[in-house]
Length: 239
Image 1 (tube, helix red, strand yellow):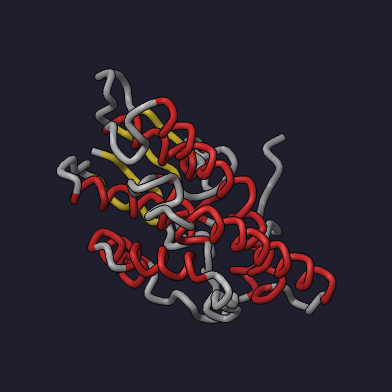
Image 2 (cartoon, helix red, strand yellow; image 1 turned 90 degrees about the vertical axis):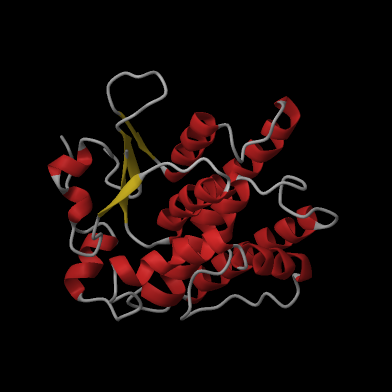
């Protein structure tokens, strides 16, 4: 049994995409959702910090690890995807070269697309005042990264080749996650083709259906208390 500490954000969706795809691939891993309401400050509770010391969601506890030992906890969405891929032998390539291809695009998302698109969303949607420089800077960077992805997808079904992988699962939720500030995807025909292919997968539908199940208030305006928890004012130094 796996406990998935989850809230329906782009990083949370990565892990439910993987777990649902494993079920469709014939290697289901039983898992239970443990909601972490990041607007209420659940990410700062001591019991959550014990498994995710950076007070970020998602996190995972595997009560049946492959070595048969004590439960293993994992935090950071990219690390969780790698853990699940290594545990099951799925969605990470079958040889050294394919694993390198998947891993580099997973790291591209973790170090580039996620943070940059996240800042784009923050300054366009959540910032209390509009800062033109920040909006322009992160819009341009998000568009540059979409161009990189579009180029990579030319002649490939998925980002690392013909096989769907954890790199695709990591990138997909971060391409255009803000309904209140949609990015212009018209110039990126390959990205649009790839998005449609992933959206049509049954596992994707099931993963995203958890959004309303876990957080039926998703999309509602944030309260001041939620802003404090989400944007760092509620954080406390551990020392």
